[in-house]
Image 1 (cartoon, rainbow, N blue to C red):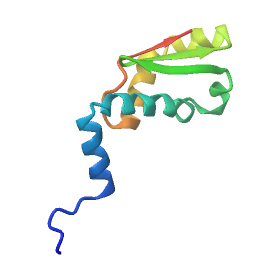
Image 2 (cartoon, rainbow, N blue to C red; image 1 turned 180 degrees about the vertical axis):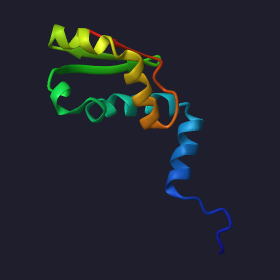
Image 3 (cartoon, one colour; image 1 turned 45 degrees about the vertical axis):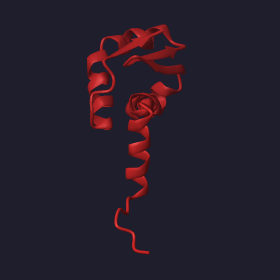
Length: 96
């Protein structure tokens, strides 16, 4: 029997994500996972938690001074994360 509708694994996974409405959640998890790559090891050393809810990336930091410094660069961090993902997933970054 000849296959006429061959699909790649990526296409099958993408179709499943669309069917189950999981694409946004997956993209948000990817955004949180990118945090260490975006900020580097020095800043990531002070990161105690990270999560994304409704397009907002919440970052827990153990250093109040670093929290203040990064707060001044929120829009740049949003742009860097979204550029790395190739689409607008993160709307805002909040520090705790």
